[in-house]
Image (cartoon, rainbow, N blue to C red):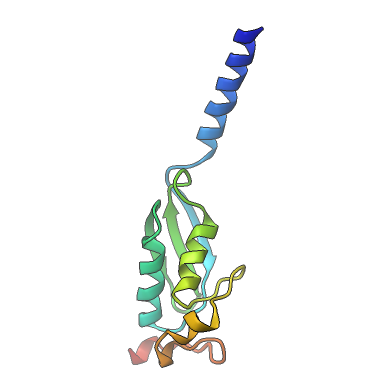
Amino acid sequence: MKRAILAITMMVITTMSYAQEKNKKMTMEVDGKCVMCKARIEKAALGVKGVKYATWDIPSHQLSLIIDERKTDPMKIKSAIVAVGHDTKELKATEEAYNSVHPCCKYRDDDTDDSHTH
């Protein structure tokens, strides 16, 4: 009986570890306007342990990522991004964090693409 329980436990643990991908591709929407926003968003994402690749597209506001799900999850990445002043669909930057971004990066009242001016 103990062997059966041990065998089942090992199978569950093995299955759970395979459910988490080492190179999971994902995207998320992040608000911003320009290349300075792009640099800030990508740096924040790449600063999270387990993020292997991050690139933010200015016109679409899509952050494309490759992550190691064994080391991080989307909410950790979103938390790092809002900490530097950029909103996501689920989390919003504090007023203090938002006000710390460069004046041209203020996207809440004006979501135009200013990438050509930087």
